[in-house]
Length: 166
Picture 1 (cartoon, rainbow, N blue to C red):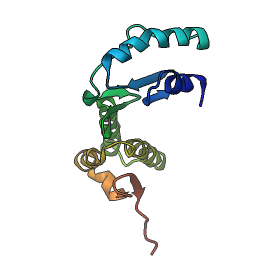
Picture 2 (cartoon, helix red, strand yellow):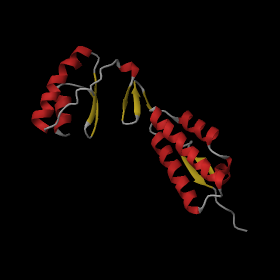
Picture 3 (tube, rainbow, N blue to C red):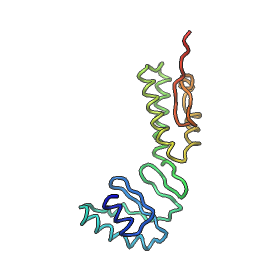
Picture 4 (cartoon, rainbow, N blue to C red):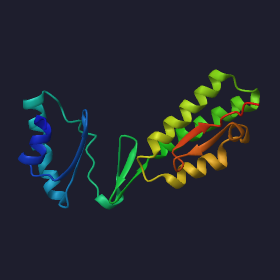
């Protein structure tokens, strides 16, 4: 446990928190308690770590509304992907469909398709997004790609079909 994590967990008594590099969140049922922690955290970051707390990036809201963190929307009992990630996935599918519509994709373009789609599917499987993944692929992915590939692992991976040798 590093200095900041130790400070949050043991020094402030915050049970629910998360951190990635220089971004973090705290969850507590008492809003006034959280407000009282802002100057304490600001001072700790300045004196111990030489960092400053951005004044416009402090958000206080009820936990049931959820909050965005690293491309996810974190709510009680579930984590979903943000609208930005969903839009990027849609754009990636549209890009691959344009390639398939324009010409027969080369081996390199097919490999790029597989990498792109599986990258998104691998990322999205960490969220409550099964129905979203399934809907996006079935509704938006071109039939040309379905002739070449199929879904595997509960809608979490696209695999190319094996060509039979005669």
